[in-house]
Image (cartoon, rainbow, N blue to C red; front, top):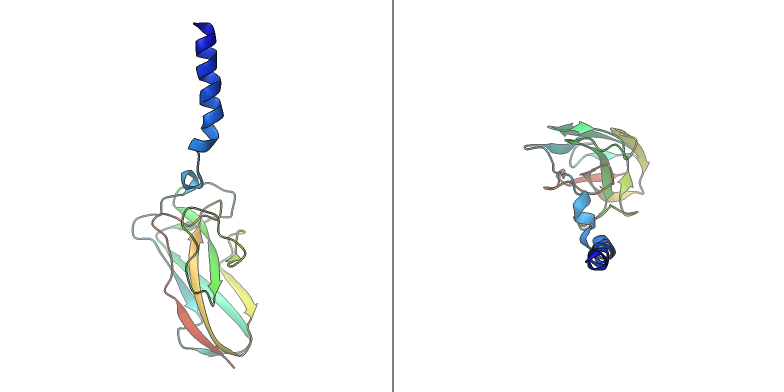
Length: 141
């Protein structure tokens, strides 16, 4: 009997890693939470050095690595065709603000660009449901 229990114990442990997925690290977003770009304004013409100010309502800002309910940190998408994948950490295709920053200054080439914010949890994973700003368009002169 003891060997059967030992076998089942080790079988369970060997299968455990397959039961844990990235989806287990998704944080719920607060009801009614939303993120937005304070500036620049949609359609605005700006210089090549652009200060982007982030806004957030209904949740708090906290740095990456701090697992605290109803908080997260900003990620900026520049000229992105799609949103980051759900349930996995955002990659190099977004600018991370894991220190809890609420603004940044970026350099952009002349032309038309889009900006969009996505909140990420302590592991850079988008919340569920995602907290995503409207995509704005700016023109760099």
